[in-house]
Length: 362
Image 1 (cartoon, helix red, strand yellow):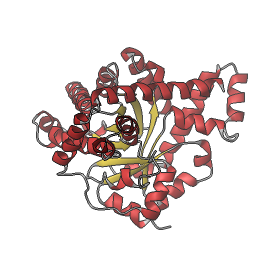
Image 2 (image 1 turned 30 degrees about the horizontal axis):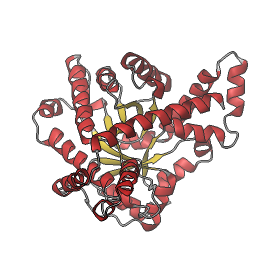
Image 3 (image 1 turned 180 degrees about the vertical axis):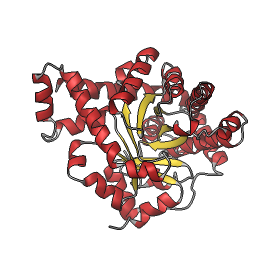
Image 4 (image 1 turned 120 degrees about the horizontal axis):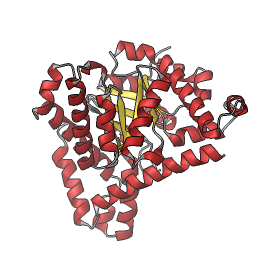
């Protein structure tokens, strides 16, 4: 089987293509392996909403859940067991990509319970527990970038567990996430850990930023405001990439760690599915091509890029000034960006928590 040329071009430009989906059907049908073979997939992300869809469509989990509950497991434990089983199998499917990339790719992400998003200690305990249960070197534990999540990220990394930091919306919070990452690998280094084996990505959500900003621009309704629709998400992500470049390639803190084998914390573009059908369905992929990044896509976006994507070598580097101008213009027409980012993070946590509750009680 041959790789799709558009997705192969994205990979060649330094973007790791990850699938934003995981289910037992995807694994048992061989579809995940087919996507690896034909769509350049080298990683998988999941979240409570992903698994809610997986459990409520079809019957793939019914026998296992029934067996576990018959043996005395409560429903939440049974579902957690089924979820971690899927993640473990996906890790095994992607092990060749993990081996070939020296641990950079071939990753499968599983999220801590979103109800713990404001509890540092409980997040640390569950993150370590999930890593032990999955018991695969290529698992990523997802921790949200809340105020309580930041010290949890540091503590979990310090224990040698690789982390996917999720629900990042602002560049300011991205900087705090990178600081948490550096503190974690500094602590790991002090304890004698092999830094080359500790990996992390910082997941910046893109389309959700446009959805919230566009709603506010339309409420303002002026020509100046309406002309800015669909521009916030990409501009914000490009500024985050510029911050990544400064922290890991210009500022001195990382240099000593790099000499000891530390990896950069790669930016990951999440929420790449276009919510507004007026926009090109490939825009959050094609407009965010940059070296050392990850683009995680739902299957619909993956197929859109495969069939219609126009992939340039780099559409991000050197565009920070232009991107800042967009955010300045948004502020000038009355968009309260700090409030936008707070609302989005709170909504994201609430949606994931609601998905997990529905999954447990469906």
